[in-house]
Image (cartoon, rainbow, N blue to C red; front, side, top):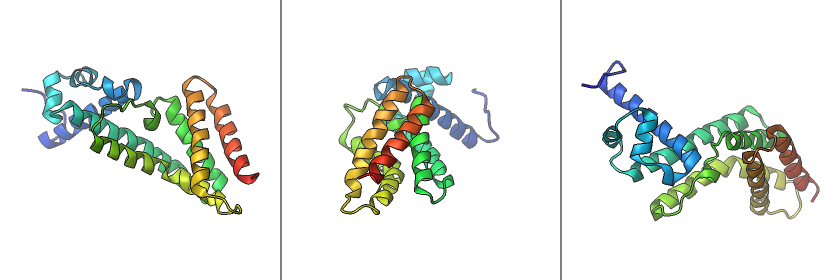
Length: 196
């Protein structure tokens, strides 16, 4: 009989499930969706492969849980950072960029590190929703800048600024200085928006 590591069986199962999902998320961040198998996650969790199937009946269910968790972790960090920045748009931009690049430096940038080819259409649709939610604070910030510019299309400017942020994430992922790239990215985006 396995040892129960929580006050109740239900709490033990929930604790074990969270642990499995967290380990699946780590595999996802480092190896992409293709790296997630019940065997790899079981090994990372110190469990038998059959134990993982008690929580996730298929590999697809395990991948979906890992994706949801990866985005939830990133969303919570971004929302917290932007919320703490107050109402100043430059401070909010800095908070969003800095947190995004910190996530990238730690290998936890869900939008960039997952190999998603071969996922079913409904999974890809959910992935687009998660990407949209993650980008929403950034789009709001850029649109606030754009509102002060004559004839500016906030959606277009947000897309261009996102390209700069993605490029910065690549630099950080390849070892560039996080503080330097963060400052340069904030300066680049804000200058582009101010100096139109």
